[in-house]
Length: 252
Ligand code: NDP
Image (cartoon, rainbow, N blue to C red; front, side, top):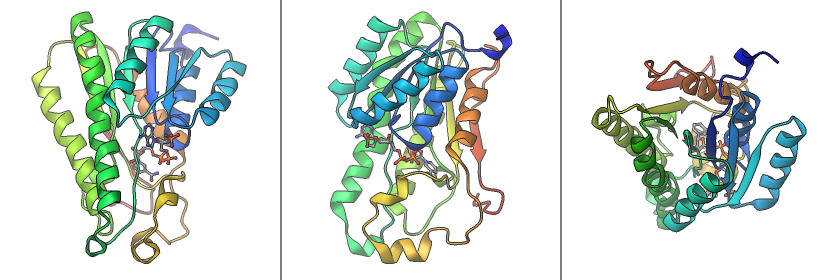
C-alpha cells in the first residue's frame, strides 16, 4: 500500500468508547490509516473482539478497560498507552451515553450519569494528555460532540447540555492554545445507528422525540471518515468542527 494510503503511519491514537458504535468504527479507520490505536471502554470482551479484527488487518492495537468517569482510570490509560505504543498524538474523547427523557420525569440518576460520562469523561481525557501534547508541541484532541452541541433537542435536555459543555470547553481551549501545535476538533453527528438509544427507559419520551421517519440515518463509518479527515490535515490546517447529519434531517 502506498504511503499516502496510510496518512497516520507512526502516530499513536487513543479512542474512548471503542467497544461499540462510532468509537469502534473510529478505531478501525484510524488503524487502517496507519495509526497504532489504544482502545478503551468498560466492556473488555467487546474490546478484545475489536482488537482481533484490527490485528487481522495488520493493525497495531492496545486494549485497556477504562471507565472515563474515573480520572485515575484515564490517567492510567494514557500512561500505559505511552509505555506500550509511544507518546499520544491523537485522543478521541468519544465515550458517551444518552437517555431520552422528559425533564418532568426527574431522572436524577440518569442526569448525573450523563454528566459524569459526557462532561467529566471528556475533562478526564483532556487532563490526561494536554500537557504532554503541549510539551511535544503537537497533538490532536477530537471531542465527540453532536448536532445536539449546536441546537437544542426536547427529550434530550441534559444530553444537549453536556454536548454544549463539550463545545464550550473545546472552543475556549482552542483559543487558549492557538499556536502551540495542538489542535482541537469537535465532531457533531446527527443520528447514527448504534446502541446509544438502547439505554433509554422513558419509552414515552423516546416515542415522542426519536426519529421515527424510517429514513436512513448515518452509519458509524460515516463519522469515522470525518475523524480521519480532521486528523490527517497538514500541520497548519485546523478542522475545528465537522457537522455531519443524515440528509433528511438537518437539525441545525
Ligand atoms: P454506543 O452506545 O454504541 O457507544 C458508546 C460507547 O461509550 C461504548 O463503547 C461504551 O462502552 C462507551 N462508554 C459509555 N460509558 C463509558 C464509560 N463510563 N467509560 C468508558 N466508556 C464508556 O453509542 P455511539 O457510538 O452512538 O456513541 C459514541 C459517541 O457519539 C457518544 O459521545 C455520543 O454522544 C456521540 N453521538 C452519537 C450519536 C448517535 O446518534 N448515535 C449522534 C451524535 C453523537 P462500554 O459500555 O463498554 O463502557
